[in-house]
Image (spheres, rainbow, N blue to C red):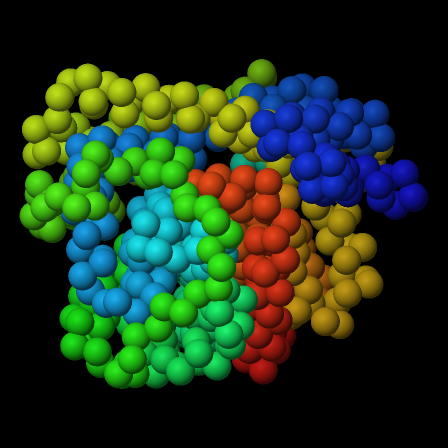
Length: 559
């Protein structure tokens, strides 16, 4: 490649970095601009086939439907619980478990957040967990930071496995044929991408038995070291036994679930098992110091307004909760049950998959797209919201208000993802060009492999971080760079599944510092405008996470 072509391959990365990060434009403005520039680079420098270019844009818009329905469903459920008062009951239940802020952070963000991530994904856990922490008396910036750090390991299986099953599948799909076809065929005559995804996920969760288990300890160290009155990391490390216990309570069940059932359920079921183990232990002060810790520094003189992200019904702090804990948790429990049954019970799965929208041969090309209307998790979210309407005896006005608010809140996300996914598809489909060049990901892979191949175990997760940081999603990071990672593994003779696992782990770590998640977390705790302070604290953790994972992969054996 010459210099201009090299710049063209980097256009999606450079443009997002400039407009989203340096110029600090909102994603709803930065991503459309970046998509247009990527399209222009593909058209005039890469000389991409016009029909393929146009079809890629349409394909991207259609592919965005699945994650958009999940995000909408998650927001709708959150607002339904808030409007009904059920969230107040959930909040009160967390308060009664332990008076130690370190324990509250682990249970709410690491375990409850992992459950939300497994169900919904797309930054939802931080938007839910951070306001809960603030309402328990934790400083807003601290709440945002630890909630973002916690939303990492569980992202591997977020939104019912979307980062692997959707992101990597789309990222490896070139012209309708998976780049990993040979690897899939080696798994057996009847194997499909889901089987290969399970293999990738096995590598991811095995590495996270070490890296992920350390996340709760890292969270409490950040909490006390940066936000405690004494600025003492040692105060967080005091509960190292409980923190590691809580880490293993999630990572071990998650490993087992992936081994036996695949990458759709580990975060959901692992979090439920973890909560069932850790919450009773916390109530009995198992492995905890006798003295609880709540010694925070100045609280910035601010508290997160309830209306910012998680409304609290009037007088809820003092009044007795109107619902039992079981009733308040029923929508989440039913949703988890529906998700599991729909993936495990073959007749039900076949029935739901029969209601699909299919869009083959877009604009006369071989590109296609589709939307699994009833099988997609978004449908289950809407179903449990309707269930909540009856369980909580909501007034129609309150329920319709929650629906309307959810729709309004989706507008920036629709614009952002409606531009992000087409940009990724242009990047992936750029191999159809008149310049005689390989696709942009493969060209970039050659360049990176030649310059960084000797240290690719550590480079691979950094690429994943960068993708999530720019695109705002681990799923889209995997869409953008899985093909690149696979090509590099080919060039270097490395274990393809392990390299893809490092991509996924890096994308998970990128969730801690990705601009979209940081903006959302800062906004819901009333700290809008202070995003740079959050990123400065989460970025070193994300990079350390990636480096530890790379080191484990190096000794595991990447070749």
